[in-house]
Length: 289
Ligand code: BEZ
Ligand code: FE
Image (cartoon, rainbow, N blue to C red; front, top):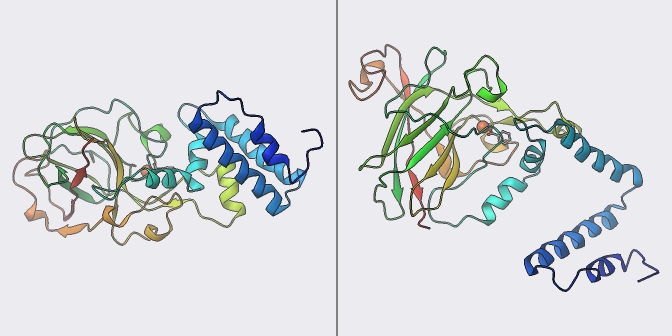
């Protein structure tokens, strides 16, 4: 079409697609174009405003490195990561939640009962649970890839003071499907806000905080892999997670326990705990493939 107008541009755009276009790509691009054009029309977007949007993307590109992906963060704070997650999850099994940008591959294999806290100070927690199928049977040979922040609120990849794999571990379940370890209570922390995403949060009066959490990736042969997180009941940011990751089945009680109740065996810290600690029980239910 030659005389393209506001009213005909979307249809003109859709008409430019080649006959051989993959049908799913066509469906996605058609919907994207319709909503994007409708957004500009509805808001009567100015040149300056559109240029600002492009500049945000440009800045995101400039700041992105293999260790820090500002586009993932943008997707997270816009709610897109969680929305795509929800669209692709079914009712059965443990809810999934955002992966975030701080997972690192090849976490070291650890024995059950390992202590991840080491010399760090902070409340000791004992985390335990089982990996189960949807009928409640334990899954043998499931791997749990776990990671969290240090008590300073930083992941190892953000903090030159930490070892590469500090607060990262990989556990493999035995016949009973159980996993258990000790660590330090995770803390609430802020997502990186020194880039364009921080600018968006700031300009829209949003805070950058996430409730404290432990990250899990759980895999087992014959089951769908699960990316999820566990949050403590009572965390001040549970109802205002800046990346929309909280689901009610992922919120657990941190049950306060006396030092004398710490298991006498089976843990690296057995026989060495002189302080009260908290117990976190979290079973993971995987869906069949
Ligand atoms: C995280 O939980 O590690 C995270 C998730 C989304 C954005 C930033 C951090
Ligand atoms: Fe996190």
